[in-house]
Image (cartoon, rainbow, N blue to C red; front, top):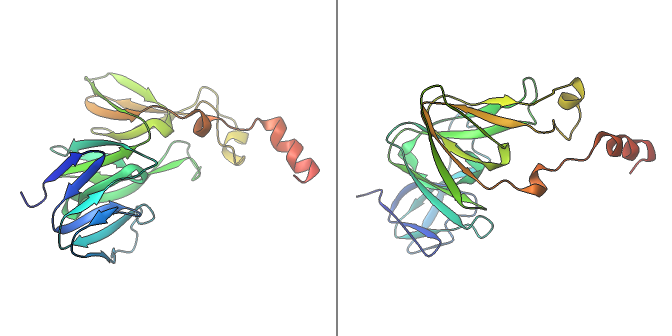
Amino acid sequence: MEDAVTIEGGFAEVGAGLWLMGHGQPAAFFGKASRRVRRGWRVRDRQHLDLVETTGAAKCSNSSRPFLTLIPCAAPVFAVSSKVLLAPAGARKSARSVKLVPMSVRSAVCVTEFGSSWVVMATAGRTARVALAEDETCSVRPEAAVAWTGKMPTGFCPKLSVWDILLPRGPRDLLFTFYGPGVVWFEGSSHMAAQQPNRQTFFRRRAYGA
């Protein structure tokens, strides 16, 4: 197949073609690899993904996200754009920003929708796949979300105040809630990514100019 991919030894390898790749990819290639302009007025995932044309085989890998997961896109798949490693350019349908907290852009997550073929995700931890039945829900920490099918998730916070929207730390205990039927892929959550400075520390720094 023209858009076939092989995953081996921590690398995703494809042949000549037009690809959507994470920044800094491919790690190695044969022949030539040229970046193409991604045209469009609002290309929301432009900051995460490049359009790359290769004339020979190309190998993609991210040393900070060494675990690769191949997701078939028989049904539309919504993938966290920053974790996309490689996909056929023609598989992309659109991109959007999913807000976990209403009116807060800081808590938004950029996702790319793939409507056909496949997408390879690169994650820092191993990826789990969970199938949700009708009316079943699954809550995932935002930093652990990788991809999903079905309905768009909503944000959930046990207690949300005005400070959670205004302060740069963002709300505590924020979660993505997914609704079945659908499939959710997620990786292990990061303690460093999840921890936030407490409110007293924030005001103390502001008071002393730190």
